[in-house]
Length: 233
Ligand SMILES: Cc1cc(OCc2c(-c3c(Cl)cncc3Cl)noc2C(C)C)ccc1-c1ccc2c(C(=O)O)cn(C)c2c1
Image (cartoon, rainbow, N blue to C red; front, side):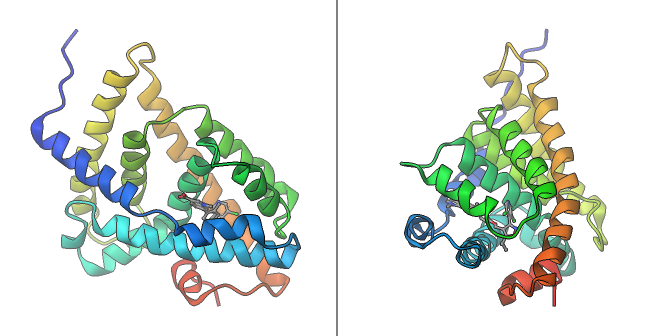
């Protein structure tokens, strides 16, 4: 059985991605509001919109730190961000749920999501996804690499130079695969399970588009940044 070894440059790549992932968190004052504001559907939607807007800013900063991203064609950079924003945010909010935020934040957050005008049919797949991420007990290295891999998906709409994106995604997949073998020796399928979550994420994109439509039908307003990244209004 060949000995799996992470090379020096793979260590360096992982370090850059994990540090960027940890450096960019939602500002505490935004997260704190979760506990303070009252529980109306309106207020919940506003809070979630504020968190989503803050999360997009965090996501853009993280993406800029992915080695090689800024040397991609500029239109392709935008296409990758727009194509992956919802998936990266579902990944992030799923990890927030699974890491059990401090003193009851998780319940509060779940309560607000459940009462924000999202119809029942989207709740089930969303919370199933949160649960399936939680069950993986991912390390932060795995979370950071999986998010970078989702962002560097070559076949997003409107990406012109897909090969250039593949050349950035492949080294991330290699180091994640080795990391999974080294960290989960008893679970040879762990890497495949992580990639399976990326497939599940793509289905959530579809549900999310419907969520946006139903919110807009009820005249809910989004911030300019969310309109930009989600092509609404
Ligand atoms: C938890 C959530 C929701 C969110 O989006 C909220 C939304 C979603 C939607 C939905 Cl409900 C669920 N998953 C993904 C989407 Cl994108 N779709 O539309 C909206 C808004 C516009 C109403 C955006 C961001 C967070 C979020 C992320 C990280 C952290 C965090 C940390 O990193 O430490 C601490 N807190 C409190 C966080 C909250």
